[in-house]
Image (tube, rainbow, N blue to C red):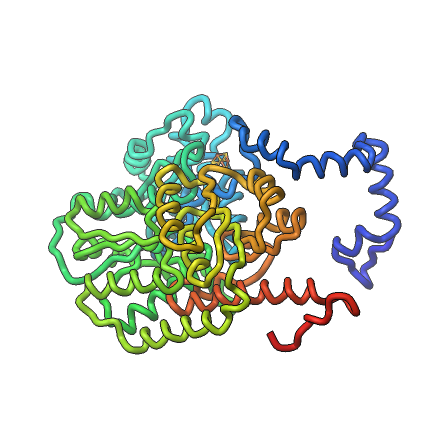
Length: 512
Ligand code: SF4
């Protein structure tokens, strides 16, 4: 066999060795009953036709490759942003392995979360025993400062009551009576990870604030929302608000836990919003959400507590950042400093420098509702034309908001908004109405391969490229990073298209 200890081949090389090729060919012939190659090609071509598109878009009872995850993933992400907090997901182990691996594959960091390991008996008799034992084990083994409980499908289908279970577990001394165990029901069969994020944030704030007497101070709470670029973005937020001199508390700061150093020490818990700060945050004059669709219920709760509220759609690019800074200035009474105005001018300058390559480029954009809104707005600022905007977890209200945004610019004319559609729908849409570029997450690589539309990875999850999440996409500096990523792809495409010797290379320019 070609594999040897002297020269270990990775699978991408190993499986192309003659022995493996032969073995895979025989396996296909003997066991897979594969259709003849011409028929495969014929069907493949048909799946790119208008006829197939119509059938595909009429699909009702099946979702294929949705651009969303289930609620508990969002809950685990939100809980990870609090000091010393262990996520405890009441349900089955496999689900929690999925959340951990999803987060680890994106951030390239360990992601801690435990489950109550419900199996068949718990599904029949209820998961109280699992909760009692699980909380005791989590408290003893992982020594957290807080345990944040959410649920998988299984616990929700049988109707386990978290509040009652946690009270009973405390009575049985699984954890001390005064130990912080906030919770959120996160039924995975409705909504998506953005709702799970919202529910867990609300659960944690309810735990600390429900009985608290509020004495208003001048601070402002900021909720970042579910964000694959949180490491870079929260640090950028700290820098911007620091320059403005705003007094603020970030509610769920994951920037350190998903970016720990390699120095010989494993940190199960790193950074996060201090629990004392969460308690004090009830007194803030306002709570600001960076992503409206991640915080609807949480903001309602904050408003009921007497705070002012404001929400943005992932502040990115020029107008998105302008709106955010102006609101922070209005709420805090602090001026926007010249240093930030200068950054704004530099971003506008960079966009103008590259206008010739950006103007008129068409884009398909997919992801979470706030991200797609922000991305479409920034693309239009660069003179680009969003042509298809898709959010599997976007609803009717999001679609209307998108249409209003697109109507506000000539570059948005003709854009189609696809709420509730999945990436198999998007394949049909792009096969029949292609765009120059595709913006989304790593799952878009299959669309890129099938349809030859270059993919720009700008949202969660990004599994097959490394470390982009360490650089911000928010603010003017973040806008510059996004701009460079778009331009690099535009230039790579242009070089490929003009690279054939003696044919197209009259435009294979050194200077672009
Ligand atoms: S959808 Fe349900 S079964 Fe699947 S990972 Fe989420 S909670 Fe688990």
